[in-house]
Length: 158
Image 1 (cartoon, rainbow, N blue to C red):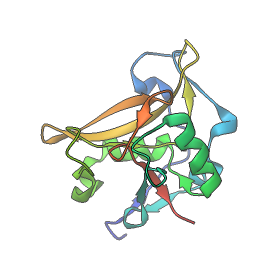
Image 2: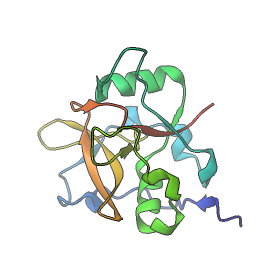
Image 3: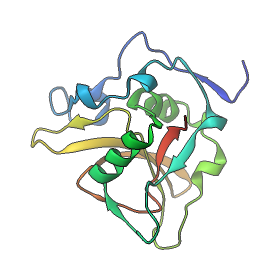
Image 4: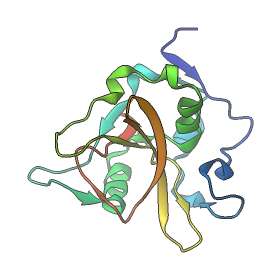
């Protein structure tokens, strides 16, 4: 198989306990899951695009507004399973993903909005990858947070 095509094992769903806080801390918001992303068993990494959903004149928006705009645009929002496959196989992440869009922040946070999850306090989150100190890291980002040019979402445009 071409190195740009990544296999996504969908035999088991993404395990939220991978995200740090143990069983029961996070729960999936099922009606927010992008079923088109969940259906992907292969992903051509060269087809992934980064979108901020910022409108002309905007420097930032809340994560919830970005999610609303992503849904309205119809992009396939890549999900947490794809995020985790990339995290576990960092060599598959293109070097170009390390670039940031501005000089205002130290790094760029790549959001995977195809799977939304709640924490115990009711806050909604998405998983993110970011390049810092010459290595990949991951985190979760609250959808109440502000998103700018260095907080794009990984999508497949349709």
